[in-house]
Image (cartoon, rainbow, N blue to C red; front, side, top):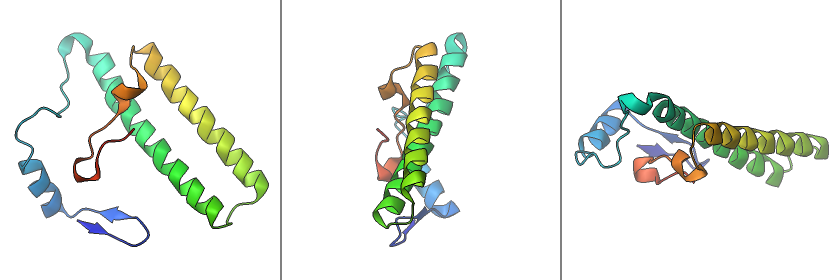
Length: 113
């Protein structure tokens, strides 16, 4: 695993294989139940979408702090991210999922919020 100064993270295939081989207890693994496959898949997909939204939000904050955005761009970006968060949470509600259900275990990086 390599972490650059610009907060980008890259994993090599060997790093990923080594990490996955340590995850033998299975408590954090995703289980898909045939009786509620739609909800389980929604949890996985919406969890990934929420993770990506959070990454975009952090990138937007970094760009704002560095003065790379105009006030109009900041407003547009903020509105877009708020609407994306609302849409993800609305979809989660439709599948009976809470925001906590969308949390993903990222291993050594921790859990998403």
